[in-house]
Image 1 (cartoon, rainbow, N blue to C red):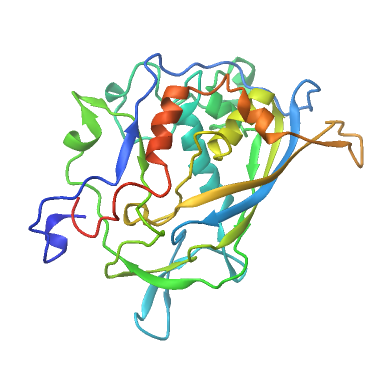
Image 2: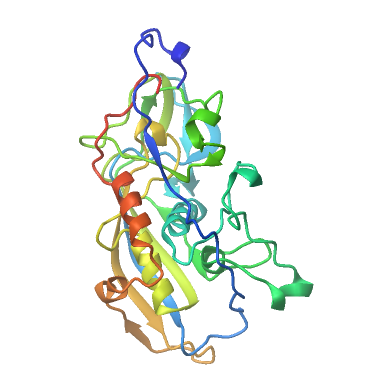
Length: 327
């Protein structure tokens, strides 16, 4: 928010509602990705099922403006599957991927960034596109091997999560703008500070109040979660569960729009992790239930220092109030 957007903003700026997890000094480590031609016996294929719970109002924009028939008359609509609000699988996948990129060890690349290459640490820019004629020689970082890259499908599938229960409602949040200049905010001596994550607000999950009407799923809304995985190692599956908040310290992801206004706080509740025997010829393959605590207990692919820094940012409830004026 900018100082002249609200009449009372002659006051000093509030603290920033976000912080940074530093990049790994060594840069990204890349190796050849696993193919999709077969299920490998020594690796795990299966599914994760659970529930996403909204800890603050959730808004995933559909890109359309809708008439309400009341006041306010226009509202930014929530994404829907059919006639029900939903979290797109791509939105959840992106939020969890950003966590994996921040905490993975060996380090992952900076896949999505607006920063110039000369402001990033060495070897941190995005992995190169995997082309069909050179797929055998491809080299990808840990996050790209799990979640995918240009030319490589990845080994995780996140399904759309359709809201159950209470209908959406309309709230009004402050107008949000990108900063005029990024140098003093995102950079330190010409280098990007790290990966940016928004904090959760204090209290009971209420969003900041403003004059921009948006359609949200209210606090307490639940969304069935389903993630399928192919050919993951036990260590990779454990890293994914850590990113989903199943370890200590816990993580509470943020997704969707209005993050600076304290929207999009989520809790992930995992009900089961099921693996299959991987035999593609079996019509009903044998399944086995995996112990979640056992999978997250040993963390060879997790950098604990960066995990602790991220957990301090993504703690719920947070330490700061929702900013209702310039920050």
